[in-house]
Length: 232
Image (cartoon, rainbow, N blue to C red; front, side, top):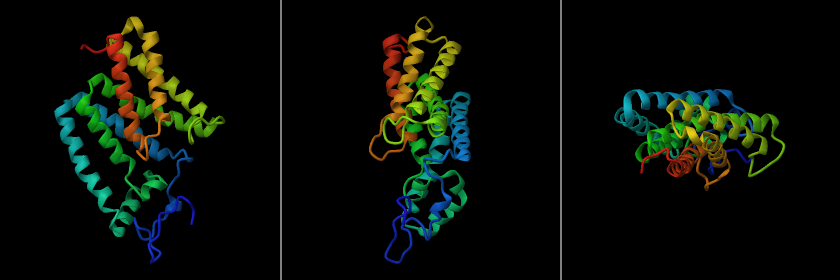
């Protein structure tokens, strides 16, 4: 059995499904374009709802999604038929490890809820943009051109690409919103550095769809306070 295969019960069936076609699910070393497009589109839609409808409506929509996907992720642990059906529907968008534990979507929804509950709207927007764009950019350049390992499967090339992409995102965002313009050549690169650093920080077995936006939000909040982006 390969390291990515789900654990088997005494009957030979996987605990999370019976049987799980893990070979059909993509690993982290695969670019997995459908997932990246889904990931980007979902976050952009979330941001669109947040900015167009406001926090109250965002909470209703986010709560509805969490009410569906959280129980689904929990119940499929003990219901092989449910897990098999979930993999059949969402398999093209899932990684191999998600056949055995909580999906990245649940982590993303949880992370978005934390951002919505505790952070300023500019912080929320930038943190999610960094995740939507910086993460796939880092993956692409890391897989395509990665040569020098930093931490785990993270590469110098992928991290530099994420830094440059997120610095550009921050620059455009600060300019369009009139934020810290007199210090933009400092705060934009520091923002990109914060985003790139969050890609490198492993926190237990937590998914980066949760850790990256929350860590970015914490770092950006400190940056905004220091350079006057937020009013104390």
